[in-house]
Amino acid sequence: MVSAFDSHISSTLFADSELASFFSDEAEIKSLIQVEGELAKVQAALGVIPQQEGETISSVLGTLTIDPAVVSDGFKKDGIPIPALLKVVRTNLGDREANFLHWGATSQDVMDTALILRIKSAVVVIEKRIKTLNERLAELAQQHRATVMIARTRNQNAAPTVFGLKVVNWFMPLLRQRQRLHELLPRLLIVQLGGAVGTNAALGSRGIEISNALANTLELNPASPWHVQRDSIVEFSNWLAMTAGVLAKMAQDLLLMAQSEVGEISFNNGGKSSTMPNKLNPVLPESIVALASFCRTQSDLMQQTLHGQNERDGIGMSMERLVLGPLTCAAGACINLAQRSIDTVKINQQKMLSNLEADNGQVLAEAAVFELSSVIPRVDAAGLVASACQLSVENRSHMLDELSALVSVDIDWENLKQPANYLGSADEIIDRAIRENNSVA
Image 1 (spheres, rainbow, N blue to C red):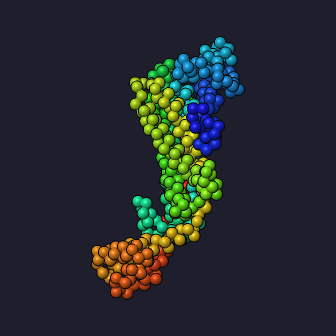
Image 2: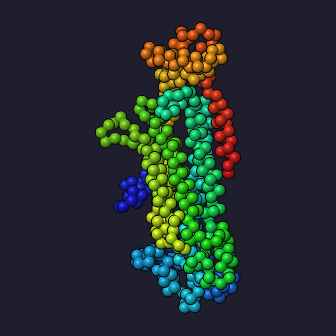
Image 3: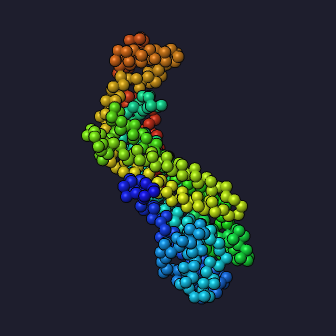
């Protein structure tokens, strides 16, 4: 075992077998064969290679299965799988058909197009998961739109809020991630066919025509050769890391709320300790934060592919092979773990209320300042409230009781004591967020 994603032990938590299947040896070879077969079929249809030979190549490759072990020695020598793969394929063809296999293409044409096909399949899975998670979070926000709790800024009690608005902070960035994905896909899901140095010289004047036809048959977007233009793949890598980071924000909030002294949420399936029976460790959100950090470092490594040398570069191809699969799977695992976290979280509303009561009105300091500002200058109001906060701590009393003793003004103190009366536009903000989420297909 080298990777935690491959370990029989840790893969149960960190791995994503569904997405990993798109980056397996078997999936890679299958997609490489698919591209070679479709290229021959397109070229035959356009009269670039003899029709009978092209159709035979396409037919043979359509049913051909190759053991990854067969091309492993070739990869060790060449650093890419295509030469060894073509050697195996040609043994399944006659001499004339073998002559027209891989006609005018270069290894990277086939590898890149095959990679994009597999990314396309992975994206379908990822997008479906995010949509499901978004819907569940929107439901949670709706359920807790009136669940009043303490909002904390810079890890300090700040003012009242509702749990539903905290959930909005989790799902709105995910909604924008879905929108960003839709925006980048036309740039990402493109065909690659440039020949040896990106000129398609071996195809004469028909390179663009063949490339467009290949894109059409593979249901990809047409594109000019992009051998050393890796920006779209890096953009997708950044998107994966950003998605994981968005989920890590949610996970970090859950970790803070699950602390014993806070106790505002808990998990039905918390992890056990080997020596402390009282522990229910928040393993799922912990793992999301760890995986998000991993995604960030892998995305950073992908930046190296942007400065490929000259017209084609083997370093970038190797870097993508090392990084992109694990990055995609780690981001996918973050989504899965986030869904499991939400499915197993328990919202402790009573604890949220008791934390508010234990605060002794400190979270109403801003509310008190603005209420007093209606009758005295704001600077004076702020000074009085600050004094009341200090007295509240010293006397273990409610801040507003201390404040009412310091001033003689006509204020409905009991109304001011209710945190639910200082929520501003929280309800409308939640409504808007839910509407926006529902509006995205």
